[in-house]
Length: 327
Ligand code: TYM
Image 1 (cartoon, rainbow, N blue to C red):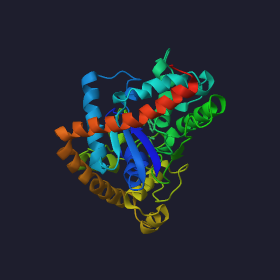
Image 2 (cartoon, protein in one colour):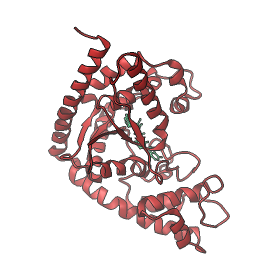
Image 3 (cartoon, protein in one colour):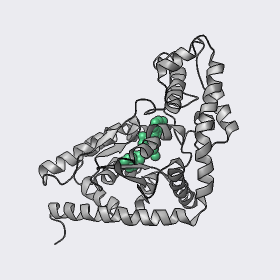
Image 4 (cartoon, rainbow, N blue to C red):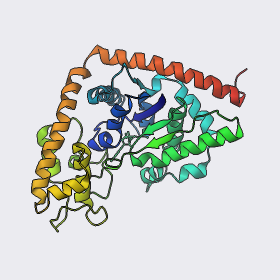
């Protein structure tokens, strides 16, 4: 069995980009692999968080994991800060990383642009992500394409340590990216990726949005004036993004969708996309409501942390031994 690891930051507003790029892969993969799904709270404090809100968002992501169909009997679900190995391994990897390679990360450049100074955690964030992955001898990392560069860095660090410290210290992981959904763009500005933190709530559809909000956000999504439903990401980014979302939710190919809507207008197309999206979100919302306030949710996280710790401790023992740490 292959080992799968991935994580989501508990920063609120989990949206259909997160779902179509990453979360739906989590469910699919748990059938044939040993899957570990983390709520990466240590990552989220790279920008200031309100402690009360953070705690709420951690439990929200845990409930969403269950609501989309992750089965805690098959997969491990846990909170990153409950397993100390993440921070510990992160330091060891930091000592084997270069400031040059971290400076090249586009996410860091985007988040620190125009600021006089940036938190050091924002700079070293990809190393913590590498630690998350390497701590579990991960083979496969299902993520959206915005994480490609971070996965590459993780591989570089693992290979470097295997070559310089000791062979087989780390398993070198592969990213897993979907064809449709790997990069869902903002509805209001289809040249930027859909994000949890964008100010305009209509830039995204969040997984817990009411039907009416879903309708409003999709109906007012930016398109263009040529009126033809055609897939052309460079020339028609808005329509192409909606086609991608349609394809990901329906399982139909973009070509088939374009053929089915030949001669029809954007309004008809958007209306159908609204229904598709509402239908996809309805069971998730219902499950979420049932799970979110239960004690069982916390039990699942406690049990997950224990199972994750057992794996992490083994890896840390091997890594420390290979580095000559301890006695
Ligand atoms: P985060 O919390 O920003 O996003 C969670 C997942 O959603 C994907 N994603 C998208 N996919 C398609 N279209 C979009 N617009 C979109 N926006 C986000 C992300 O690629 C991600 O898979 N650094 C990670 C969390 C992390 C992690 C890890 C992931 C920390 N450690 C270890 C995998 C393995 C992040 O910030 O994801």
